[in-house]
Length: 166
Image (tube, rainbow, N blue to C red; front, side, top):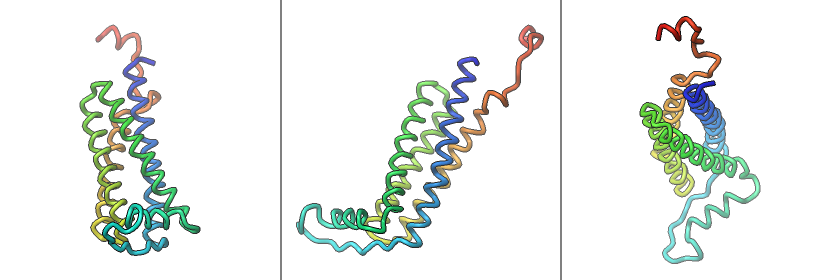
């Protein structure tokens, strides 16, 4: 396999992995949105260690909240994977893949911001919408990368005759 073929294969693998993880993340997020009760956050000035954030994190690790914990951990894994994809794209100097990887990572970060806002301030429509739009943009970005970088088995095979013609 040529180095360009290997590079395309790596981009395709990373992009498809992110799309798969995003699908799981979406389903977990919908479960949290529909079935997990987050207590409202009360703002206190200087009250206790960490204020309202610590109260929410204590809730997160209470019994019955494992889906929320998995959802948050998967979000962190997705961001790390998005950073890896962007670094790989930058190292390849493939401007198309760099642009779409950066777009996907920005959408992941926007979704994470929406998720943190949703977690901290309860069921917030704007935060929920930001997560949904971020998911769609991110999924589309990595899907574009996967489609544009086909697996080696889908690449046209150059015969000796076509090599001589080039």
